Image (cartoon, rainbow, N blue to C red):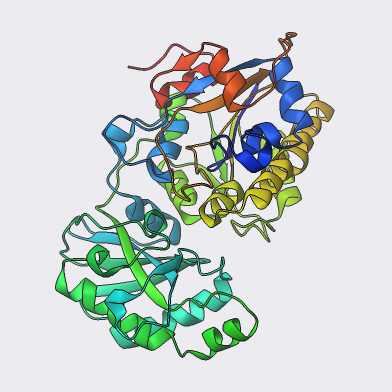
Length: 404
């Protein structure tokens, strides 16, 4: 038996008037997910432990079987694992987003945050911009590291774990009272605007009608993580397929195989077919029992507040990820159990995450049932099933007794 988690980041949502009061998931044309739902099980799962922030970090730890209350030490340290940074026990890692701030104001503190991702800037352009920041601002205490697209990292030696504001939580709002209280972090963010706002890459982006990556934004502080091995925990040899450093970092921490897919970029134009084929290959040719396939697109479109593109991202997940994976495993003669779910909702109406329960779909190729339901939030809620602790879902997938 092969096992899969296919995660559409931020895929869950709230009813939207322009979609006839449907959610993007219920409105989208998803024949494969609906077919699997009609032959399997649907329900709701609580991925964000009560009292914790609804982030992709805590939620994906849950979906992979790790209790965030036990294992979570901050988002950025997980990304540091992916980038290959050997953190010391006294280091603090911070996410360094390249964001778009409004430019008409004369005072930095009066500017508004317009885009947490700078229009999903390419990794290549972002690396050049971060290098310019690094050259001017790096010290013996603060070190910059390039990541993927707008997602980068700052390591603070002998640092403090501070409560910092997530940029996607304050889109369209003035930044003044949301800036770090720590003086040097505050000053680096302010100086980063001076460095980046007139950089040739940003001048060209504006000419092309793209959002400039004109400021750094620090958040997600945390200390060196310590995850137990996924194989030791579950008895399954696992692999991770994702474009984003957070998920790859979780996999590194869990001693899972990290599969690099050319052209996978965390955006709407990612290499869907490459991800699907890599999932089939890792299960049928590379000796793995389990694969976690992560798609960032629905979350990004939720943050952008783009209803149409969020629907499109979900349809791509169905047609270009789930369908070819299921068909590929069937063709290879493999029995499989597959869970499909979001990590958290990212409603387009508020453009940030919520801690609401999310719908899951569990399909077993060896036990096909017949039901009338489809896969969406409303029908999963009506099923009456609720997995109250997100990290228990993995045991349901593996058909094992829940680990306490």
